[in-house]
Image (cartoon, rainbow, N blue to C red; front, side, top):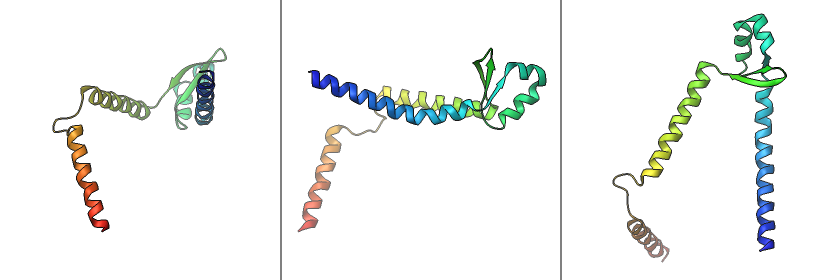
Length: 122
């Protein structure tokens, strides 16, 4: 039991390390495009437009990330992805589509295909 717990903790630790190595460059890249709220007050929307050319903009207020500004295109892309995930989830939860084959039908077809492999080998 102890060995299983140690293996599970090791797997979780390794997973966390891999996840961190994948996400850190993304987060660092995204946080490089920042603008302060004070600069937006001073320069207006032109400061935001300029920063948006590099991607999403993180607005810093009182030395803390406060907002993220996206272009309309980026927002639409994210909204479409969210809708696609929701539709996929609905399909997965409602069961097989009409005309879907049962496990026994799939197994029978596989058995037939495997039998044909044995005949062609002779």
